[in-house]
Amino acid sequence: MLDGLILTVVTLLKIVVVMLPLIICVAYLTLAERKVIGRMQVRVGPNRVGWKGMGQPFADMFKLMTKEVIIPTNSSRFLFLVAPILSLAPALAAWAVIPFADGWVLADLNAGLLYVLAMTSVGVYGVIIAGWASNSKYAFLGAMRSAAQIVAYEIAMGFALIGVLMVSGSLNLGDIVRAQSGGFFSWFLIPLLPLAVVYFISGVAETNRAPFDVAEGESEIVAGFHVDYSGMAFAVFFLAEYANMIMIAALTSIMFLGGWMSPIDGVGDGIHWFLIKTAFCLFLFLWFRATFPRYRYDQIMRLGWKVFIPVTIVWIAVIGVAIYYGIGPWFQIRG
Amino acid sequence: MNFETFIFYVFAAVTVFAASRVVSVRNPVFAAMFLVLTFFSCAGIWLLLEAEFLAITLVLVYVGAVMVLFLFVVMMLDVNVEPLREGFVKYLPVGLLVGAIMFIEMVLLIMRSFKSDDFPAPTTAAAADYSNTEALGKLLYSEYLFQFEIAAIILLVAIVAAIALTMRRRPDTKYQKPAEQIDVSKADRLRVVKMASETTEQRNS
Image 1 (cartoon, rainbow over the protein chains, first blue to last red):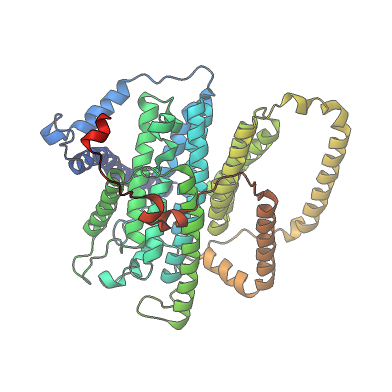
Image 2 (image 1 turned 45 degrees about the vertical axis):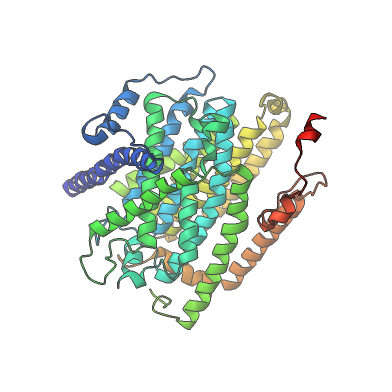
């Protein structure tokens, strides 16, 4: 019984150690987003609160915390309040299996890859329920768009991960990184380049980020699924979106960019490489948002179903043949 | 009662509660959400059996994809529940009969396979390097290969049938062909007309 208690306490502490930096990262990602996009548009970005605007995320947070949460009259009250939690919980739960460095992982799950995929797919409920419970046409339209989009891109995402799993021979995220040891040219980015591109773009679509943000589409349907949310309820959606972004960036760096491995073989492997790679992927998110105009809805569907899924299926066949003939250092039968 | 048994009873209670709410709740959207809860707690029970692949796949496929589409349809249709309740008393005997038959069948099945003397032994914890996914994959692609392939073919036929049933090409629908859009040249869209410039006399006349 005492062992169980100690285990529970230690696990809770570990969860705090993962969550606290994550929340801070989310806060500063919002600032980074405004600064980076500001620079790209030849502006300065927020620079008033604190040193060079470093206090801005906290100012935003306090503003949202002190605002009133308004519940629409004809809404489904229970689901309206549950929806933000439904979208945040999977976004945080998926972090349980992310290996930050060799052995630095909360739960060393054998089916880690599947777990991550399942958690990202459950996140859509928050959006759908929010859209329906608000009892508003704009919110509902946003929810419908988001549901169709996420279901479409999840398939491409899953297929891209099948390629990773074929080459690494494991579903364990730590083993996937270890299979990429040996410097830059052993990373899966090179043999799986089409899948890496498809995965990252699908990730952008799954997190409802620009240019795939039709679920929000502020110029068409005001703010989409969270149009009726205010105060903390809105802040929770915001938090979930950014936590998901960081997650997709972390997963991309784990599966295609060699996780904690250094680009030069054996030189200073460690968490700093993982963080650098994740930060680079996050920068791509912001870059996309500043660069591309929003896709039209039917173009998104076409891209998902008619371009990405065929590309992934063809590349899986290529990987199969390559593994059979043992081509290069990448395609070996492992595990 | 050890901790695992306790967790099992929690999950089992939630499953039974959620499953009964699926059929008893008035609002179809809530019913769908309770079905999601049922799947989730079922996955929890499977995890206790160390069947992590099946448990996660249940969440991934049923919760992540099937139920999303279900909710999609239920929300779009805006089902009016009242007409559905009209024939409740009329159809009650038939319903009870079907329920009773199903109950008896299940009792027979369960009594046959779970006699108290050959009750399956509690599963022993597997070794740390044992991978449920790998074991399942090996079995599926060796011993049960033909059954697996037949299931795949049936699914493929179902997909083709579903698409064939819903594909109705309306002649007046306007399609966008991205390949053609990209393929245009300047000559297709722009016509440069050469003409003599206007003189002052022409303008004033």
